[in-house]
Every structure is written in C-alpha cells, then in structure tokens.
Length: 123
Image 1 (cartoon, rainbow, N blue to C red):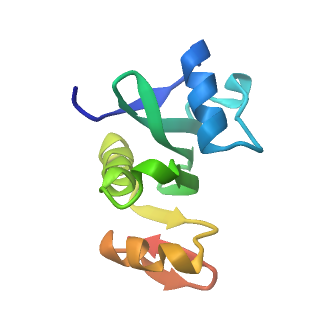
Image 2: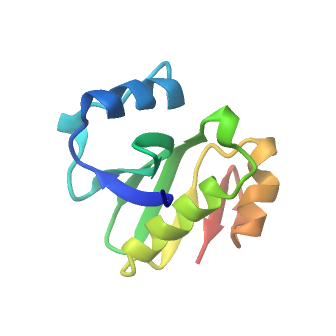
C-alpha cells in the first residue's frame, strides 16, 4: 500500500481513533473544517500516521499542529505531508510553520523554511 496524503473533511470511526493517537489532547471537530480551515493527513494501510491543521488566507497559509505518530517518525512522512499540502494550494505564496519546537528546526530548514521571530516562514 502506498502512503497517500488526503484532505479530511469528515472522519470515519477509524480516522477518529488514529487522530486520537496523533493528537491525544485535542482531536479537531469536523464542523470547524471548511475551505479556509483544513486538516490534511498521511494515510497508510487504512491508518492515519500524521496530520496537520492548515489555515488558508488569500496568499498566506499557516501550518499548525504538525504531528507524526512516534512509531513513524524520521521516515519522511512529515516532509511528504507538508510538501503535498503546499502543492495542493499553489495560490499560497507564503507559508508559516507555527509553534515549531527546537526539535523541528532541522525539519523546517530541510523544507526551506527560515526562522522569523517564533515562526518558520517559506516564501
């Protein structure tokens, strides 16, 4: 089975179980998702391995709460997820990766983001 990146608009029961493993303290509400507030996930063998919340403006996209399940980390899943999110939204010319911890600094740099204040930005 191939790793696929999907935009989640509704959650199956299995999606909810997986999202609880990704974000144990804050599963998003389907009702909060729309064209400007999106949730993307990496799916493999019917399971979600990673997810990210994305808020879109006219030319700026904000990437928040990127999380890859611990058992899957360091295999390129997060990078593939972010790259596909950006490719799915070609109208966005400025991307902001918020709340990136020090652990994510190398990850953000590898994707071409530059630290500006507390956020990582890619233009």
